[in-house]
Image (cartoon, rainbow, N blue to C red):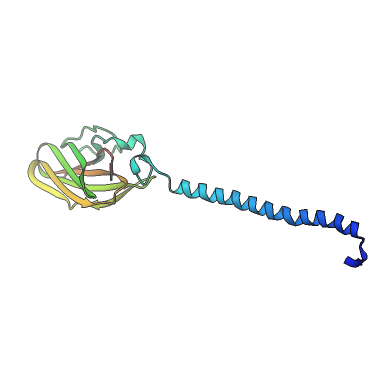
Length: 196
């Protein structure tokens, strides 16, 4: 075994240089790795806090969800057919319907809906929901009480609710008709709007 005193002074100097380099390189490597890791953490946090258009908290809905729909058939007992997502289904009593959403300011959203029958029927009904885009799907936040008119050809309803600013919202309307034993229904949705 060698001791410090048994090594020659030249050998001690020769050994000191590589030893100093070996001890210093890991420190620099650790600092570089920490710096690179810090940059990765910063990039990840910037990505998580991404800024979407107009200060939205989520990306906008798909283009197909940005524009409202026509009346979409859900069920018709009068014709006996069921045609999901068929536009303008040709039902006997349910003529049309609509739902709209209005930004009333201060984090308040207004919903308006209407259902129209082809003639005076026993019952015309409507229910309107506020839906919020999560970035991947629509969540229902609020549903109006069911609004009906008896012996009428239409029904109209409106309501409002407080919503969280920075999200895309839409109104979703459920429309139905009861005439004797016939029941027809469908739904519509409004254009999507960003409420700030």
